[in-house]
Amino acid sequence: MAPSPHSADPDPDEPQRPFPAPNPHDDLDAYPGLPEEEAVRRAYDHGWQTVRSLPPDAVVTMEYVAGRLNFTVADGRIRRCWLG
Image 1: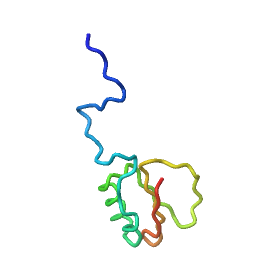
Image 2: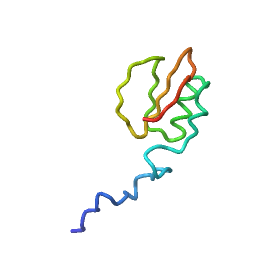
Image 3: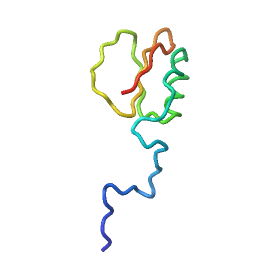
């Protein structure tokens, strides 16, 4: 019987992430002003795992989630963008 692969060993059948860190390398300053639909599409295209859109002054918890990009959206456009 062959030994089972070590959990830290990458799965050869699994595609490798293009970024070494949990968050993609992305220019967050490029998002404000974009229409929400375009910004969400751009975020996923740049490797973000989760995109969260919030209204202005939304109350949110302070937990940090690697791979998540947050937007404040008003009038269908991105007003603010931040990690986690």
